Amino acid sequence: MGYYPPPYHGPPRPPYYHPPKKHKKKHRKQPFWWKKWKLACSQILIPLICFQLFRTLIFPTSFDVVLLIILVSLTVYCCFTC
Image (tube, rainbow, N blue to C red; front, side, top):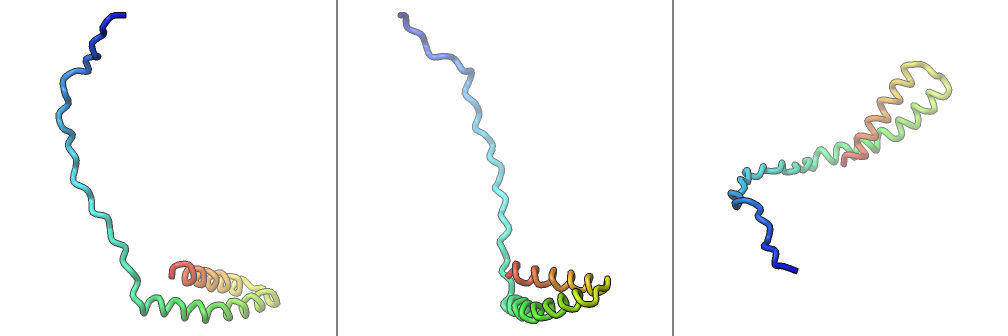
């Protein structure tokens, strides 16, 4: 077995240019009054949804269904974004 020199990979590379890092947006906390307002709304909306669901089951009209959908979506927003 003979001596094999290390393989030639070409001239050395110039240093790689690293672009400046972008600053990440800081997560802005919600004000306390906004959280308090959303919690109060969710406490008010849950009984309204129960009443509206009962009313929709007894007297189904398109207005009742749309109102129920709006109330449910507001409650989901208030509960899951706190």
